[in-house]
Length: 236
Image (cartoon, rainbow, N blue to C red; front, side, top):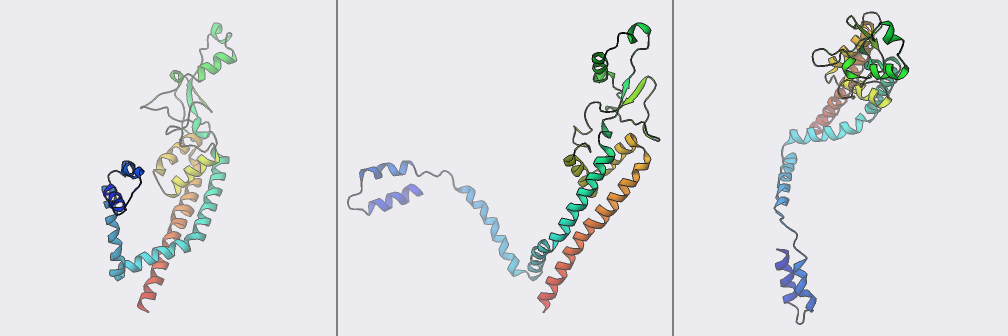
């Protein structure tokens, strides 16, 4: 199409330059059929036709403006929860049951720091059950290791390919956000309870009540108020 238009322009010239013979070789823009996808934008015209839909869209736009303070409050609370979890559970999800070293006299006398570190970092010496390395803890009520194993900290990687942890502020904020949104939060709850003890349920009660039940519903309240104001303006 572009080649035809260029040829038509130069056909109107009395003495077109010779270079114009090669212009059409470089104006091929390929297949423009993908631009037809923009036809779906015609559906936006229905916003001005349907009164109720127009009110909803206006309410959503206004709610984005009103949610500024709520979002700042949510980020602040999320940072506080993350710092608290960072102090409580840093390295907790790295606890694993490691097989004890042989206790015979000949072997125990030859154990060095290098051989000990090689022993505890060898995955074959970790307690493996039901397709995973279960967590353990030395606190009261935490998960216990079977006979012949000892619960050691800082072994291996964190659960879920290393993404579930409170070892850094970034991962702590990610895990806290997971709790606030209740995205498979029970798995993280069970991991912490097994590694740190049942009294840690108080932390989860706090973050879920304030985060999920209060902050998230506060956002919904702002959206509902924006819709009510937009609906009242339409009636007036």
